[in-house]
Image (cartoon, rainbow, N blue to C red; front, side, top):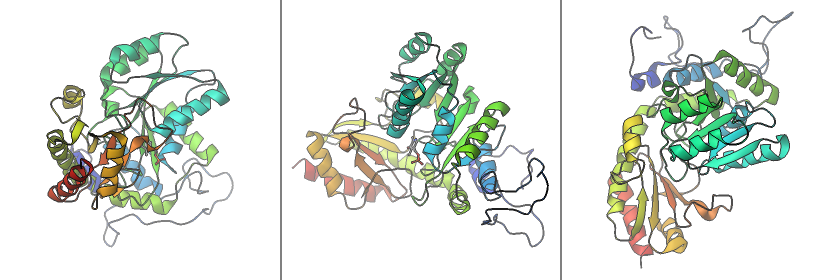
Length: 384
Ligand SMILES: *Cc1c(COP(=O)(O)O)cnc(C)c1O
């Protein structure tokens, strides 16, 4: 363990956090412990391992590392998927409560919130999260708001929220604030620094980073909120397998390198795409003309590596681009070392306010010139 009194840069923390104690002969990496149960007699004291759904040692190094990266007062809680963590966070909304949600957010989060409406009478108010006045009005009007859900940048429109302003208004209205920090990662955005109550992640994406695990995490500074999320995980059994968590920690070790590389490539590709004649519109907060540019520059340590692009020629042209690429992988999901792309409206569940022709690019760590050649060839071909 490095001296905790030294303020370490996050790019160091990803490497050092969650290592075993340093002693002669000790392993450098934590072991994977595959055991569903642990030796115990009588009433196990708090903190003693006794059953794998309650707690298991392979979770701890990853939970400590993510807690340190998010600068949380407490370790993260790892869940079996991002959605399991999101369901835990949404369980903090009481029956009959109200949640204010971005109209553009991860589609399954929106679907789950609407499912709660049907089952628990929870009201959902959908907003443009970049429009602070609209979010303020939504928080103040009608039934008291129990929760403000924030994605920033949003999926897939890349709108950037004024996080400190929204936290102030939400807290004044008595609402908890949850941020889905999957797109930004804790290297680019630390929501707790803005007073957010709960942070959730799809660890499946950048944190694990290799498209080989499905995993989630939730974090809370407040001991009561942390205990409620922890209790939800145990009661619902929304737990992760030790091996997946170990893989995620392995992936986390290179997070800083991966994020730096893919963000730089994303900004370069966004710039070139915005000058390409076969392109109608590009969305990436790095572009000076992007509506989220000023806010992202002020609030984030980068612009992320998701790019939205609308080729000329509508949905057919967009499908043609996706079909024509050879290096980019046509696939859903994002945040892996390999670059992927998809036309989001191919899913009937995607919000109708997302343009039909929008392709979401997840920029990986390949050579940027190789990525550009492939994309540019596909674009020129789709333009006929
Ligand atoms: C993928 C994703 C999720 C869901 O996570 P899973 O690990 O797939 O359950 C939630 N939020 C965002 C922003 C995502 O990209």
